[in-house]
Image (tube, rainbow, N blue to C red; front, side, top):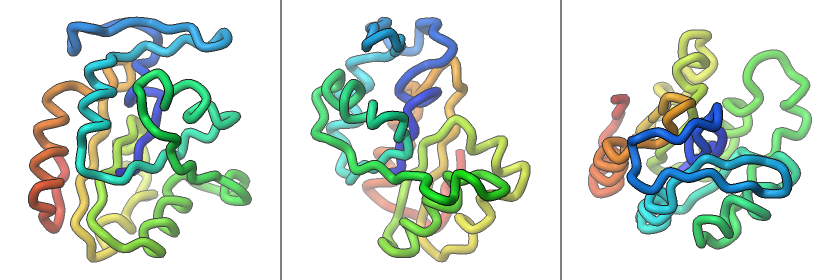
Length: 162
């Protein structure tokens, strides 16, 4: 599972929503995280290996993982891709998926926008089962998304785009 943080597990802008009963805000060294501990538990319970592209000062493992009770997450870094034209994250994840070919779930609030620009065409061409979920940035993952994720993990189909 390829997991973004801001707009996915951290609703942004920082406005708690009613999609989870326990939405709250936590200050982590001056950085506000709007999140649901129930959401974090649901993610932890998934039968999936999780990697993240949220590399900002390794805050994923300093703040996010401990906040949700997760083990440290492998972080895919932008490296030189940060400076190329287009969306660095798509290139980094494509390389990761091609080196680790298996069904995957990609959770990122920027997927809809990048799809419009053709930056994730490789996903449909890679030949692997996949699920793309692009939550609303201000809502993050919602309980309804977990129904899709759990169904896909139980039976990865060739292409699943809600």
